[in-house]
Length: 429
View 1: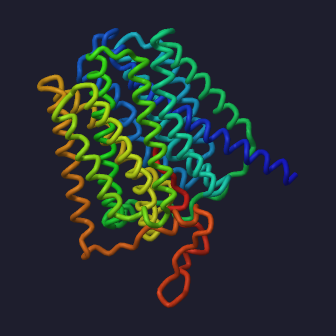
View 2 (view 1 turned 180 degrees about the vertical axis):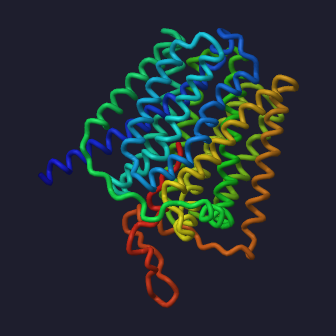
């Protein structure tokens, strides 16, 4: 019986990681083929921005409610429903013949995507334990690499519908497998989130810095997702080539995230976040100075590498603060996902409007200014007057041989007896 339960837990872990991988691939697969949609459906810059930002808009609407529901009632059924929604939405996108249908399909997909990134991760932590969440980082990274490359190649040779139908079939099959499993979820979070608790946690400088990092990551992702393919396409690059370029950037993201996580306690600091935010903001200057293909590609690689650091550090910082303030795990994940979603909506919309009325260089400049403002907020929050303890215990517990630091006087804190919230959080890929 014990062997059967162990086998089911392993299969469950594999299926959840597979769902994250395929959903991330489907999310980023749109980037290299967006110029094809624009040509086929006659989309202007603002409409393209709406399509790219639709996932973020839907995620913004569902992340915090999904996290709160997970804290109260568990996450299994919510995750299965989200997988089914993503499969149906991806199937609908394959046959979308107009802008309203395409936008509706992306909104539905975004709702499922946001729930999986909240409820799915909580379910994984409940059933398989915090160490299993490490695979979610790699899964999302692989999906982010494979999605643009495969979608670009298949679209170029077989048409737009083929990669979408393949993604829909994959998501549906994995969701069916999860629904068929009879794994026993752990208890719901012991501390359901309350609005007051969230407000208290939001005043913590770790949360402020993490949110600012997510703002920069989200805005730069949206701008690059819209403008980089358009500029490369205008220079004569095919969908397959654009997908390959984004795949190379995705490899850099995966490598940067792995190196940052391997650094352990030394990486989970506001200083590391600040350096990453500064590097990303500076890299956007390349797009302001020139929109030639070499400059755009170097900017894409540099900003993607910097984002890998921001995502890997921001979640543990915010989760540690949430644990200290008595906010549940689901609410902590949902809160940061909601911040990301807001920027994922504003990024492509603003970039599309500015590029349509001015130029791509102006859009990159506006994004750089917004990132600089978020960096300034982080610097202000990091002043010595703000009380904060480094979020090290959660990441240290996931690294072999590293133990939590003792409290002053040689005693370990009560939190050391059980994995804190930050031990249960991966980084977004």
